[in-house]
Image 1: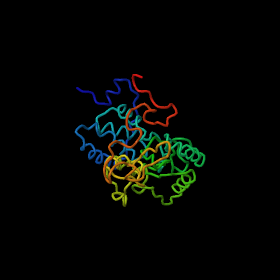
Image 2: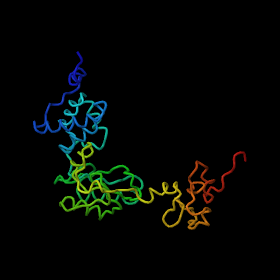
Image 3: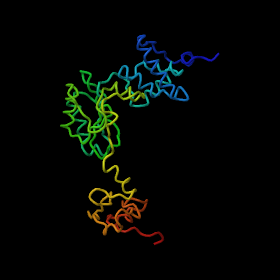
Image 4: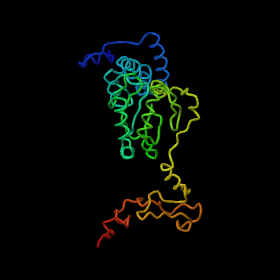
Length: 294
């Protein structure tokens, strides 16, 4: 007879979690939701990630009860579920706030002021990284790149964008969140609580008013390469993404060497090919690159 996942854990000498369970009405509701999610996949265990979001939407973080629930629904061991839930940072491992305030501290955001924003928010809120304010409203964390470098420095609240922040605007933002005042993301859908966000990430409909119509498109710098590939002009008439060292920018058709609407023969960036730096940039201090064989 094949051992159940729980029996396998015992045979492997794994420490057994207590077996807390949700109240009957909560369990019935979560089971109905879980079965709907599982039915979307050819193999049940493929539904683990959305099910972790589902249990996180119930309690605000992934609890032992949630881990046990996922294991039972997917016929996995709690060790397997725990391994996944602790690998991804999107799953919280302890109680957290209604609003996850993430400050990007990757390179561009950092040099544009992200580090200063993060430091000032820690002092202003009286918490450290991955800590929650005493009122349970805000959890502060530094986060990795969110692909919004053209709006640096960026702050995320429950994964909605707040662009071009300063220490002052970020402090006002968290004050408004804690006071319950309306807060609108720079772009994208209206803000909701972390639990509501987790349910949406589990794959259930977004009920926020205006969420379907919301847009959060990339900025001009992110789209420049796509526009050039299509033969379109960039704002201001330039066809350069990276400016030459002398600051010169061709701004008309004559200087660009092509007719209106015609795509450039080669990409205008000076970094379009893996060439020796001094060959691709004559102004480089090392001087002209020697040709092979010289």
